[in-house]
Length: 446
Ligand SMILES: Nc1nc2c(ncn2[C@@H]2O[C@H](COP(=O)(O)OP(=O)(O)OP(=O)(O)O)[C@@H](O)[C@H]2O)c(=O)[nH]1
Ligand SMILES: [Mg+2]
Image 1: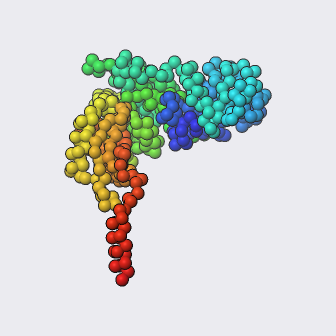
Image 2: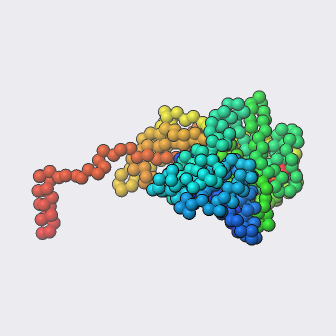
């Protein structure tokens, strides 16, 4: 069911180990309404050590959740274990949606009839492997989440652009926000895991309203001893998804770690605009600073479109520059790109550096239009576009970025080949052409 909801295993973004069974986090597939999904291990009634550890993992996931989906095996019928799970979930106080799985090809009413006795809401017949009822299940679950749906439009009108601060634990996210606000609004401490939930605070700069979002520090893999961390990963992921721009905070004293790179990868994968703050720059020697910058270019070579600022959240130096980079990135993410301008830029770019020849034909790129915003999606039309090399795609993106001043936001490019009127038509020779061909053959044989 998790794979079905998230589309593929690629949607997997965080992998939290317990001793026994991980909590796995993912985003719903693009064709479904947006949500963060957590997969948990099975709940067993046996009171051994293994079951206890699994319980702890499930409890943490339930605590983070707005709504819980209980998945039962319909082909096995309602069992004592289902009764047990249902009673645990009822006690959690969270809304529960009951899904009865493996319903493909069955009569729905009869299939779920067993499950009314669990005393949860209406049981829904689903098939995770076939996809039946999955969309309905998600809709039923989201109906329990007040923030779902049109939150996006409501927010941008009322509260301005939403700038979310993310980074490993203890890098100074809350300190940055406090310094921007000029008050100790958020708890900061020299200890990872200080912030446990995503916190939204209003902020105004030069008369423009924004929403700042502080998040719990996210790390890809906790050590086993830290498996029982109480902060909400789901809320951090959701805050990234809802952001207009993300500030990724790094700790200059620790260099760019693999976790930083994977967090930035997650932000880009979700198509979010960003700026990078290199924090705790104070008290570092020149050679330490040089070493960090060198490591940064090396670790993140593909990030030249993202603005990076060394800052001290503690002292407030450069933090406004960092914030302004983020707001520019947010604006770029929502930029409107008129078809006329896009096509003009495309024509110029193609005239300067034409696409390569493929099988003695030149790939033709004729016009471009905008297919979406946040992040900008540019659709380029032409012929044989599927043969366009990656290097040329990158070149196009860079040129569009430059022409429209789109710093800080990823840009998506979609190539579309128009209908080719000759496709699939066999070339039928005329009588004279057939005769000529035969003559030529005879001639060459001789
Ligand atoms: N020297 C120095 N210390 C800083 C700076 N920014 C933050 N710190 C310190 O780093 C520690 C952690 O800061 P927090 O703001 O709580 O970090 P966080 O990223 O919110 O941490 P979590 O909420 O646990 O994810 C605190 O002791 C801060 O005083 C800075 O620019 N320079
Ligand atoms: Mg914090």
